[in-house]
Amino acid sequence: HLGRIAEVDGDVNAFLHVDTEGALAAARKVDADLAEGREPASPIAGVPLALKDVLATKGVPTTCGSKTLENWIPPYDATVTRKLREAGVVILGKTNMDEFAMGSSTENSAFGPTRNPWDRDRIPGGSGGGSSASLAAFEAPLAIGTDTGGSIRQPASVTGTVGVKPTYGGVSRYGLVAFSSSLDQAGPCGRTVLDAALLHEVIAGHDPMDSTSIDAPVPPVLLAAQAGYRADLKGLKVGVVTEFTGEGYQPGVQRSFEAAVAQLKDLGAEVVEVSCPSFTYALSAYYLIAPSECSSNLARFDAMRYGLRVSDDGSHSAEEVMSLTREAGFGAEVKRRVMLGTYALSSGYYDAYYGSAQKVRTLITRDFTAAFEQVDVLVSPTTPTTAFKIGERADDPLAMYLADLCTIPSNLAGNAAMSVPSGLSDEDGLPVGLQIMAPALADDRLYRVGAAYE
Ligand code: GLN
Image (tube, rainbow, N blue to C red):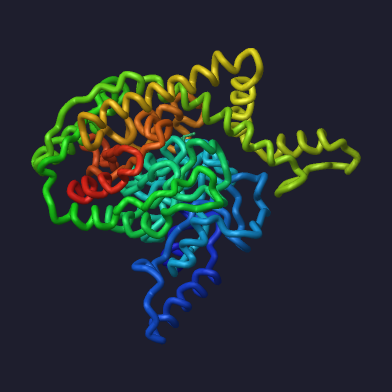
C-alpha cells in the first residue's frame, strides 16, 4: 500500500501525511506476534488503514485540512486512534479533508483538493474525500471518516465505496477535533460491507472520556453482515422516503435508486412509501445548528493554545494577534460559518434562528420515530448527483450544501445510516450510492440489508 501511495497519490492527493515509519513499525509488531505464536489482537490486525486528519494521532501531524493547525502535533491519541493501534491496525497516514470538516468536495482543504480516482477532474465528495478516495484508488483497504452532515456517506457514494455513520454516541468523539459536537460521529469506510463491519467493531464502544458516548453494548454489526450475505430479506419492511425524489435528482441517480429498490423487492423485502414531511427543512436547520456549534467550538483557535500564531512585528495586543491569526489561518468557508453561527446565536436572533432550528430538529426525530413504527429501515439515494467537476460549485455555497440533502436528517436525529454502492449511473458512468437508514442503536440492520444488497 505504501508503494501504491507513492505511485498514485501525487495526483490523487488523498493523503496529507504518510507515516511510513509508524506504519512499518505497526506491521512488524503484528509479524512478530504471529511469529511468536501470539493471537492476533483483532481480526483486522495487520490491515492498513487511512485515517481522516481530524482525529488526533500522538506524535503524528493532525491538521484538519487547515493552515491553523499546519504544524500541530498532538500529544495524545484520539480514542478511535488508540483502539485502532490496540487492534494491530496499520495506520498508513492522515487523509485530506475540507477544512475542519466543512464542505462536500474536499476543495476547502488548505492543502489542495483530492481527486476522484474514477475521474480525476471530479471531486471525491467531502469532507472526507481523502479517506474515500484512498479506498477507491486502492491506496488503503480500510479508512476512517467522520460524519456531521454526510461527510462519510456522500464521499462513499461518489467514489463507489461503503461508508457508515454509526449511531451518535456509538463511537467516541474523544480526540476528534470538534466541528458540531451534537452531530459529529466517526465511522468506518471500506470497499465492502463486511470490511466496514470488521472495522466498526474495533472502533465502537463506550468511552468515559466522551460525555455523549452511549453506555450500551455495541450492536452486533459483524454477525449481521455475515448473516446478510447468506440470507434474503424476507420479513423485512423497507420504507422509501417520498421527500427524497423528483426535482434536483439526476435522472441517472433516480434510475439507479429505482433499480436498487427493485433488487430489495427481489430479495424478499416488502417495500412501502413513507412520508417524512419535516425532512424538507433538514438542510435549513442543519445550516443554522452546525455553524452555531462551530462558531463556539472554533473559539479555541485563539493563537495562544494551538498551531498558528501571526504577529508581524510582535507589538500587538492579544486581540490583534487573535484576529491576524484567524484572518490568515482560516479559509473562506470556515469564516462564513463562524459568522453565520455567531449571528444565529446572538441575543435577539437566537430564538428566531437557533431556537427554530432546534424545533425542526425535534420534528425530524419525530418523523423518524413514526416511520420506524412502520418499517425496519428507510432508503433513499445518498446524494442527488454523481461526482461533480472540481471547481463547478466552488463559488456557490448553496449549491454545495445541496449535496447533503438526504444525509443530514440522520445526523440531526442521531440515527445510524450507511451508503452502499448501487452501481454506475447510466447517464455518466460514475458511481451512485444507496443510503440505508436505521434507528439509533440498530446499526446492525444497516449491515444486514447492505450485505444482502451488495
Ligand atoms: N458537507 C456538510 C457540511 O459542509 C457535512 C460535513 C460533515 O459531515 N463533516 O457541513
